Image 1 (cartoon, helix red, strand yellow):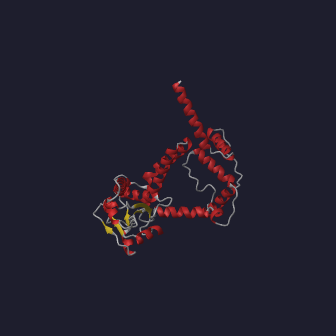
Image 2 (cartoon, rainbow, N blue to C red):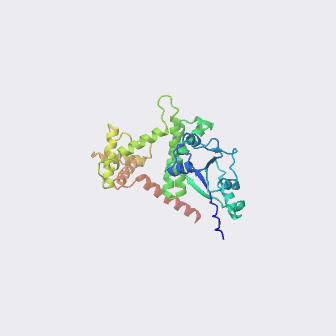
Image 3 (cartoon, one colour):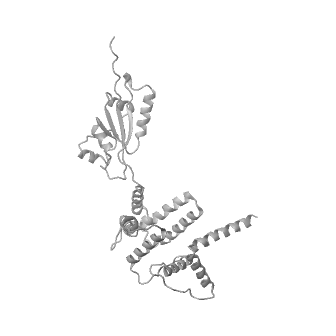
Length: 331
């Protein structure tokens, strides 16, 4: 009695995914191994960003009909005898292939008893944390170029929106609404990206969002010597001391009041000035006066000395008062 013939080897289909937020050609080692070991490499998109780099690496890619991939049965035929086919995913449409392979397996496989090939999803490149910020920049570029309203805005036009979005962010923090907080953070980010995009067009001193980010990174590193340098800081107070010292050296201000914006809310302004004077060790007495303004200044100073933000405290009290009014209205 003759020995049974060995079962035909199941081939393999590899769906290779890549991120458009990563420079083309920067593929994982596993992706390069799969590509170099494949019997066939297929792609449905003649404009796929990886094609030039695969060509430079000597990997032959077969372009299928525009927008189409071979059907599941056809691909299973490609894999007969244990061969491997790599499909460059992109632009959607791969779900038809995966659904077709699932249906093929449910029907008993291809004709002739050939096994259904294995299907592997292989990430060739993936997003790093913060990669979606690239999408924000790209979308803003297009809006600036094509939107009749956005294309005409200036820094001055947007100033009021920056204030509004900052206040709405504070409100979301105070109410504890997580969904609202996420949305308002996005709105604040929009202001940053929008202003940076406008700044690129300045004829004398242009800068980009990358310049903004680079300036921020340099500042953060410089002001955190206990993280990026040899300085030591074991308490929040130590950190604050480092921060104030490096900030003072950077700014070289003639007065501790320099850099305090006078158009911020009055309670915040009062607390900030008191904090600057106290931090510099200046024995500045509060101005004497009987008016309500002087009493509010004294209360702001009292709050600052106690580590309480007077603006936040008053907002909380005002919110409680608003709720009391609403309760009275429905009583």
